[in-house]
Length: 147
Image (tube, one colour):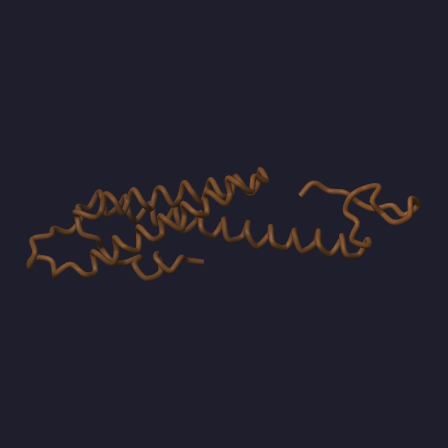
């Protein structure tokens, strides 16, 4: 599953002047995806929400870089040089890494959603009393889980 950014711009070269910033943004987005996955695994909602906000900001920054690149005049008319081969390869590697992380992140989010649906179903099946000792009758046992 590709993000709209990688889908639309995977094969477009970016101007030399924007390439280092573009590469930095790709790498920062990969770090944020990794951070978000660890936040989900550690069950730290605050860190997860912070990471999602940073992901949104990085995606907006990447979009603006690509928009600036697309709005620039044709190469040669403005003197903008295409990116060098080494930088182009690092950008391609960062895109590939980001794609793998994006797929993993997507699968983790789907799995987390199914897990929450399962917990909600269990709570409903057992009368909706997810904490021990809060059932209307002391003889009725309920379940408890840390979510």
